[in-house]
Amino acid sequence: FSALLAFGAVLVWSRHLSQAHRRGPGVGVAALTLLVCAPGVISWSVTVKTYAATGLLVSVALLALRRGCEPGGRVGWLAAAGAAVGLAGSIRLFFVPLAPVLALGLVAWPGAAGRRRDAVGAAALLAGFAAGSLPLLTAWLQDPAVFAFNNLGYHALRFSELRDLHSDPTPLVRLGAALAGTARVFAANPYLLGFTALAGVGLGSLRRATVEDRRFLRLVGLVSTVFLLGCMAPDPVYDQYFTAPLVTLALPLAAAGLERLTGARPRGLAVAAGCAAAVAVLVLGLQRPGMDPDPVWSFDSYDRVTREIRQRSGPGDMVFSFWPGYVFGADRRHFTGMENQFAIGVSEKLTPSEKARYRIADR
Image (tube, rainbow, N blue to C red; front, side, top):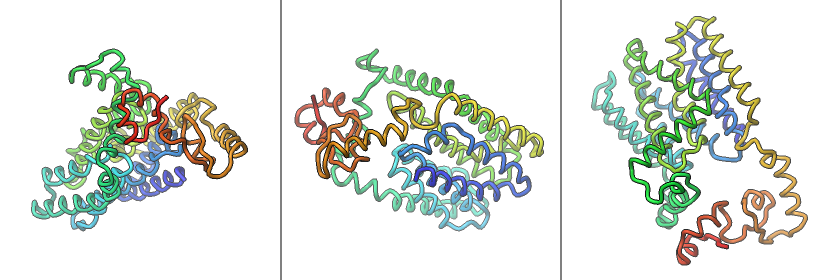
């Protein structure tokens, strides 16, 4: 299912890029190659996780944003962009800040239609965001404290290299650790590093773009930066936070960078696409696509474990597992408090009343 959602994102981008680069269709093809060859996108889009779903929603949001920024573009497109961002934020909180930032950007960088129309567009985007965020709001209203713990508390209590070294790190130390963790991710992902540099070239070529294209690409650069900064907030910084989403968010800038460097000449675009494919093959050849190259996380291993659980238990039985995915796949009941694999470690830092409220098992 995740792969189907990822394919849907590719279809959305094929339409987006074909519209944005009508005069040089080769640029769109080369940029699409950058997306489909990105090791982070491939790797995380085949996992039973939410990365493919948010990738599709972000792709839809950017397509709708571009249509809304076009001369004579309907305000409804901006509302649709906000709704897509709201749904993405309901799935992964990292995307929540993007909507208010986009609304501010629409007002700060006025379009040809005038500031009044920009203000209406920003309001429509925020209204769409509010509608898309209803699942998130519903979850929060059920129990704000539990919601905050499930989405933020776990990150604050689980394994942390920083807190192992500093029991009470200062804000400056936290910032240094975030920057070091992010730099480590980029150093370990050469494709992402090159892609980001290409997006930077695109951001530096805005003077050659039309007024509306310049405005759209500025918005893309703004939300990409805000998203990256948000991904640096958790401790520690994990590469899956942004290796796939950042490629999706910044793809229009990378396309602009391709056009700037190659002059939209077919030979240069073909070389760029070929280099992207070669790097992808090399990286994916060293690391199997997926969350972890260890065979224990393969589907074959997963099927063997769930099959064993089904053979040794009956429907409705409660099963204890340190990783809840096996219990879910076997269609059995989770041992209460073990729905999250970090439960045991986190429980040591909670009071008895907190463990009961948050449904956390202890030793």
